[in-house]
Structure formats: structure tokens, C-alpha cells
Image 1 (cartoon, rainbow, N blue to C red):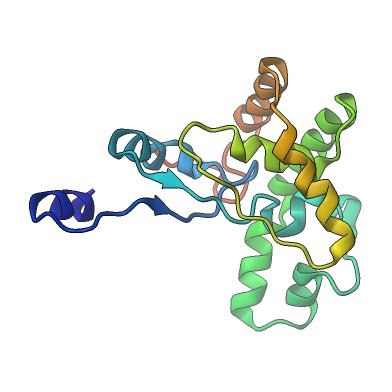
Image 2: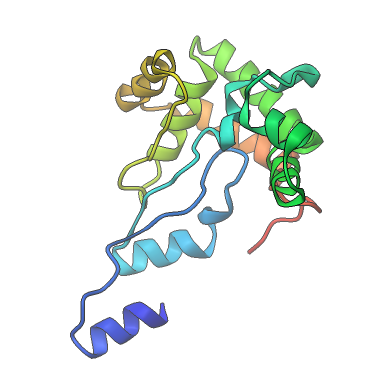
Length: 176
């Protein structure tokens, strides 16, 4: 806000977008940042809409897939990498991911598609940044471009957040 105010006051270039981690397991942008984006006409460009790969479901049921980023971080990483992996990959994010997987199954959609579609459906989001490790992962991600989630699905996704608030936080408390 200060940067935007300063830009406006001195007729300088202002922020047009911000780039933050935003996903079904990290919804912190929905509080103050979303309000600022709306008020100041600044777009969010979410990165990591798949929660660092957690929202692919590949880590469910205790799996640590060989070659996966957080597998490598947990088994061979430096302490900073291990800490980051535990932030993304913990009991709360995995419990939420299981619920999201059920919703995706119920509506006949890949979890990846559902997760990316959810991020782009916010009025303060201009575009969602995706990335893949292998070309064969791209199609399921790009399908989200044509998906508009219905209100029932959005309510079900919100119910998971209500049941398991802010899964990436250590204490599970919402940050307002």
C-alpha cells in the first residue's frame, strides 16, 4: 500500500501485479492481499498452484516418490530445504489434499486441474503461473484454462479450508 500510495502521490509507475504462493493449501492471499488487489486494481499472479506438487496427490498415503522435489529435500537436503519440505508436506496439507482428491474424483476431474482452476477463479487473479517437471504433466494443467468451478464445488473446497485452516502453517491458525 505504501508503494502504491507513493507512486500515486509522485506520479511514478505503480505495481500492476504481485506474485505470491497461492493454492488450496495456502490461501493466505485471500485476506488482506486480496482486498488490496481489488481496491488498488492490482492483479495477483499466483505461483505454485499445485502446492509444490503436494496437490498432485503424489505424496498421499506416506508416499515419497523417487526424484520428487520434497522427497529429495527430506532425504538429502540441507536444513533449510527440509524445513520448506515439512511446511508443504505435513499431516495437515496431506489431510486437506485427501479431501481435495475426493472432490476432484466426485466431479470427474484431475486434482491438478481442479487446483489450478480454483486459483484462476478469483476476481483478483490475472493469470496463474504453472510449471511442470515433465512434458506429460502439461495437458492436465492446461485443462484448467477451460474450467469454471460451480458454486457447489467451491463451497466444498471452502469447507476443507474451514475444517483444516491454513494447512501450511505450523499452528493451523488463520492469518488475518
